[in-house]
Length: 261
Image (cartoon, rainbow, N blue to C red; front, side, top):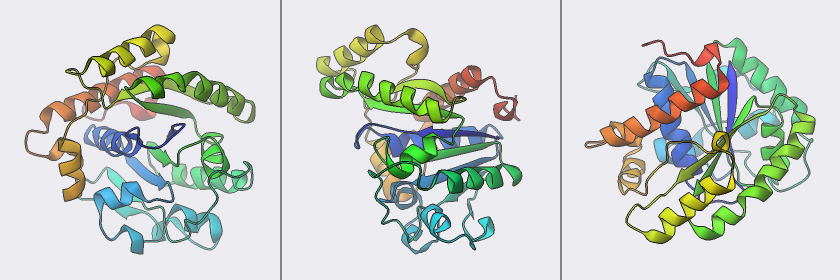
């Protein structure tokens, strides 16, 4: 199994949208995927099931060693796609000191791997501290969604520097790159910001694919679905399948080889 954290310096960059639709793209390719909501706000769960607030989940596991994975993993209609909500014990200080839950998170990922999943995709709370830091310091790789707007682009080098420091705790951590989100092709400020990021960073640190700003994501969330299954969702499904392919190439992980290839 490969574990990938989806992380950002701040909220509102499309992190949850990326997590949901990317997990769905992998699952459609036959990759046994578990999407974990590690953000106490519970955005993944709320986007896919209105009952998520009633479910035990990731933070309950951190608080209660007696909980089993069978009590936490929620299957979906797609056999290869499972979820885990953030849970009831989501009052952790996600901006606090790192390390408090490091051993528990690593044990958790080890147990997930033994359950036969190929991919564990983790939507973290914004920031590189507290539980989010522990998740990144336990994962194999990290993706960084970044909104295509000038102010946000300026924060990317600081985020990458922070991830570099986390690699001291987790030398195997692979930074898969920055994924541009909310790109508006008809807005010069947005396209210029995207261009500036590509000029700022090495090619291998920026995904070739990018996620547009599109009302279909809002409609999909309202219906509790990934955007790709919506009517007229084929272009979005294609974008995330391309992102999936990029990740597979970057990691060169046999676990992510499409079962439908």
